[in-house]
View 1 (cartoon, rainbow, N blue to C red):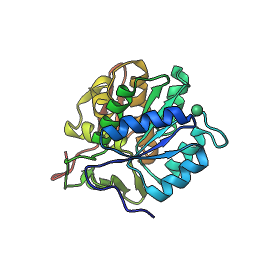
View 2: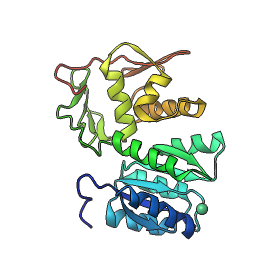
View 3: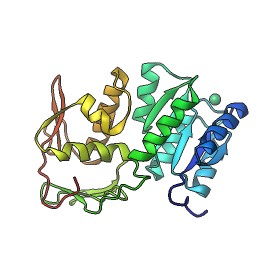
Length: 245
Ligand code: CA
């Protein structure tokens, strides 16, 4: 396995079958001092991911051979690496399907490269690829759930362990800043995405659904996050003293 990217210089894997677009993205990203790796199809993407361990993946969906959705599923089985989908599949339904598969953000083609850069930067910032280091763990409900903010690994007492994506962790952390208080979807959105609109409301819902599934929370009888109809969500678990907030 290759060494990990040097601090401050994030490594980005571009998965795109159109060589011209791939070169253009490389140009823009390298100008911003990112390290760029390219893959022209799904199988090459998985091999490059394994070899280079990038900090972020920009993923096209319509690829020759192995489709982008299958690449995302394969990546999500082994990694919580941030994934930005950049696809000509741009209907709401297609975007939501992509987000449900585990994408952190979704950009419809054609896109402005500057918009892609802005999203990449935002995702990396949220993923903690900058100076923000929080040293204490997030502990809820007397240690029932403990999350390490650096690795985002969680353990759920007696019920397993795993890893949250950057978006899932930020959302949970935002809720934990004011336990019991309702948060609207636009407020929660600020922790995980950039543009408030209808699709992005559903991005919050998709993240909450992922958290509930991973953390064994039942929307009908929650221990962790309660849905507030017509408003959003609130944390109903207690935040333990000394938790990361
Ligand atoms: Ca394509």
